[in-house]
Amino acid sequence: MFSCWLSRQYWGFSTPTGRIAHLIRGSLSRTLVLSSQRRTPEFSSFVARTNTCGELRSSHLGQEVTLCGWIQYRRQNIFLVLRDFHGLVQVVIPQEESAASVKKILCEAPVESVVQVSGTVISRPPGQENPKMPTGEIEVKVKTAELLNSCKKLPFEIKDFVKKTEALRLQYRYLDLRSFQMQYNLRLRSQMVMKMREYLCNLHGFVDIETPTLFKRTPGGAKEFVIPSREPGKFYCLPQSPQQFKQLLMVGGLDRYFQVARCYRDEGSRPDRQPEFTQIIDISDMFRNTEVEFLQDALSKPQGAVKAICISEGAKYLKRKDIESIRKFAADHFNQEVLPVFPKASRNWNTPVAQSILEEQRSGLIRLMEIQEDDVVLLTAGEHKKACSVLGKLRLECADLLEARGLVLRDPALFSFLWVVDFPLFLPKEENPGELESAHHPFTAPHPSDLQLLYTEPEKVRSQHYDLVLNGSEIGGGSIRIHDAELQRYILATLLKEDVKLLSHLLQALGFGAPPHGGIALGLDRLICLVTGAPSIRDVIAFPKSFRGHDLMSSAPESLPPEELKPYHIQVSWPADSEA
Image (cartoon, rainbow, N blue to C red; front, side):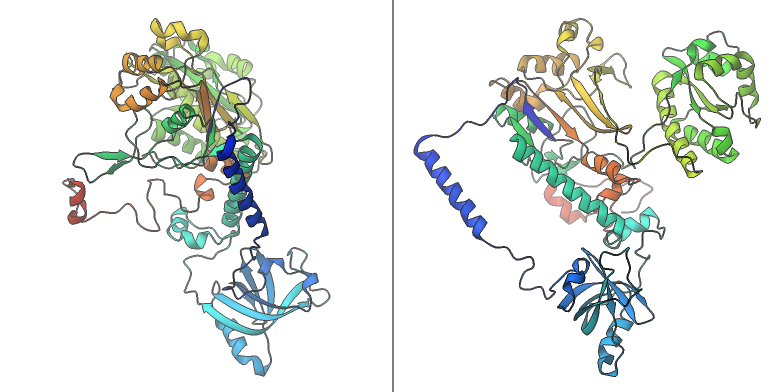
């Protein structure tokens, strides 16, 4: 995430002058000269290997090399493939009687054991080259070998095509990380982060600054993790984002700041979904005079609506069990009834209710939704927001089902970006619609054109909030911030009914000449997930948590004995049906 001042011109850094500047520049130049003259070896003197497995080519023919790596696989006790972080190389196991000890080590070591071999780089025999391997023209004829560490029986084969449950992968994450796909994902992530740093720092003068992990509770937003301190009754909170620190850095004159920040929110993990492939169309007006009871009931309520999506050729590719799983998904996750309707399908899977709807509005549905042969309409009725949410999820579920049947709906090589703007500044609270809450966060600035509405009709005020969407998935969001202390105080205290004492430090800082400023936070995990085509953000994080927020490898979180909780003045109140 990064923040910067808003200005029509570049806000540069002031340049020191005089003797101090001379000392700074002199010290810096000496450091740079020393750094450029100091040669950093590729490997330290403690490493025995001379080369990596993936770098050997025909240009290395005749060279004596020492390699270290994992045994990928072995063939007929004549060859084995050695793997390290650079790639693969074929090793020839000696068959001579004089090399029996070397052969014994390499033939008896289990797959995924770590070995060190020394030998000569030779050409593969004519016709045995492997063009699919970068090292496929050569092999290493082994002279000596050492078993560095044997591998016990694996819980799963470390091959990308071998299916493993996600729970098993997370339990043995250190083994899962050896797979080609995980290696690719994490190395690409590293390269992307490095490019971001180079772009922001070297080309645009941003400053990389780390902000604290232990902070205080922030009003609004997601639930926060609470960290006890040794002072009775006092707690830290892990920050949902460095939001307040970003603004304080702007006040401090660090006008172009960024960091790759850890953000902590006490909510379950989730896989990131793929882009949508069709639109939700509102068909409420079509059914204003309907005699279908559940549609009448929905439309008679405030914010009631009838919504539908059309699944192109759904009747042709989806099976009856797929249709039932779609309905079950909506009921289980949203407590919402979804009705499949087949206006022009050769299969007559319409329920009596669906048949009644078609008798009323078959031609209207076909015309409005441009329905073709074998299309399926998913129809739901209820509160506007809820109806949109369930259909938004179902169209993604349907896309997955159709692609599993062989349809190509989404091009993984295509990257389509979209900015979403003009969000409302406030939304009614779900638990109390008469009160307001921030749609984004309480520090977002109102739209300049709507400023007067803050004092008369605040629910109509637009915000200066913006989201960045890639292939249908939100990858970033930010806003122009409130830089006026009195405006910030009014929004917090009067409109949101928040305790301003929690933010007294920020309000005080805004009163000391805070410049207009704004920022954006990009979801790095989500972005890399889309770039790599990974099905879940857990596939682009080295050590992720499970869906429930657990670390299946280390069994965290775990209970602590009372004596370890005592310094924090905490006692655990166990539920009656649980065991300590």
